[in-house]
Length: 220
Ligand code: G3P
Image 1: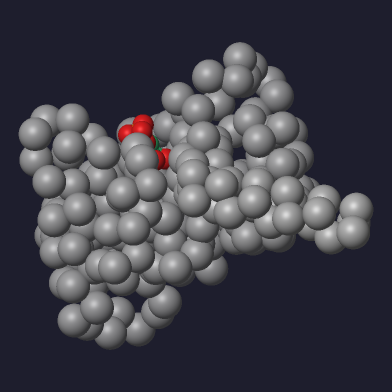
Image 2: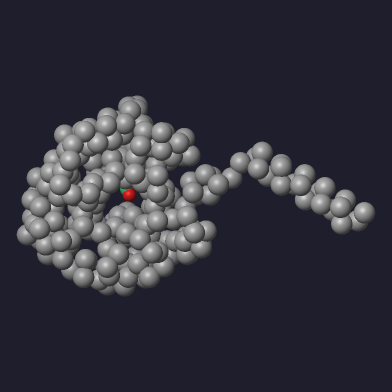
């Protein structure tokens, strides 16, 4: 499973990219707004992210009509070769995805919650599909169970093009473990969760004792 970073924060992306284990970035309007992002700076911000990360960078469209989504997508895709156009799962989004697919532009279909939504997204030509886990948990449903159903359904078929499942709306490392065991291709995680994923108290305790013992070696 690959790790993407789910953030629009440049410092977080730079730090995580320096660890050498992050394969891409996903952003959305909420994440950009959280950084105090201005409309006029949006494209430059996406380009900046693309320059940091050597992999796909999802930039989301905000139009609701197919032609406008396509126009937005074409503009976003022209910014940098790393850009993947993120399109919400809805009828107009499907139509736009088909059009973008035919133009050779990669789409990440977002806000995907059900198996039929995922199958339709794949049929429309989405290169990535983003089932949300945490938002199911928020309404007392099992997000990982939904993710597992989506992974299994998508893996049942050949869509004639590559389709990767991005486990999204990841809220804790347990979601990352679940996504990996269920066979998601990618987990997109906030920076804080990436940090939690690399940390373990037994690792810290082990390192502490190794270093303490090395002091004894040095002083012998
Ligand atoms: O990038 C989309 C998704 O990961 C959002 O997560 O935490 O807002 O449900 P969340």
